[in-house]
Image (cartoon, rainbow, N blue to C red; front, top):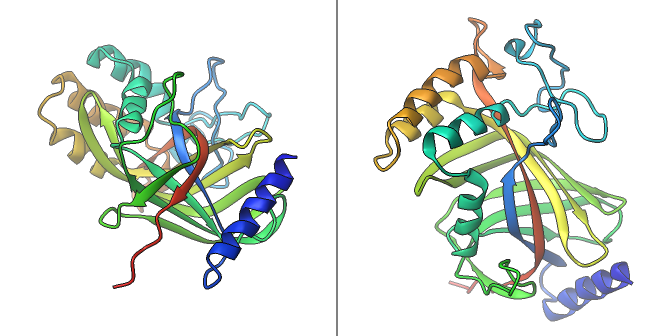
Length: 278
């Protein structure tokens, strides 16, 4: 039934906008750092195509994680830093991210253009962009599905041409996105590079997914050093751990210049106001 409803929605979209390709849109309603309670296990992706062991010759010797499904080589080197950051900052980070989403400060729209089949499609153009809030919130404290949002045309976006949809799971690579993240009531704006996004179409009309990428350690340090209303220990911690946790984009000197970061998310159905012709 879910697949039939989705197909009907796609066909309806095509009928109401005959001059454009079929589009389905999702809004990320919950998001947090990808991390598992079990040591050495994390959701995410193999970003560098290598399975790195501790002190091994690849990935600057930063050991990779294992995905909950058993896939090795998962790059998510930022995850072990989270407990230390929360300890010196006094707040858990995921609730701060969720507050930003609910307040309309971090609304990410995922538009799937030229979606011919909701189960299998070998070429779906993916467009991730910011939306303008605030959203309507349900009694469960989460964004309600089926809302219509305006695109934030002044914010940077991300486009992946010919993402693939296989058995109801969308896979997009390379995925690059500039992400403004609320850290202790301050926004850190950083760019995720050479990343991956996947998203599953659930039978209840929701979406579940993850995305990951490499963040320049120099950019992250500069961002954090520019913040005013955070404990002094946070910039010191970030600068220290970047040297020992960077695991991507090795330089000629053998040091890694990026650190892998992974997020997991859930999404709900959404609609987008059509762009006005100039």
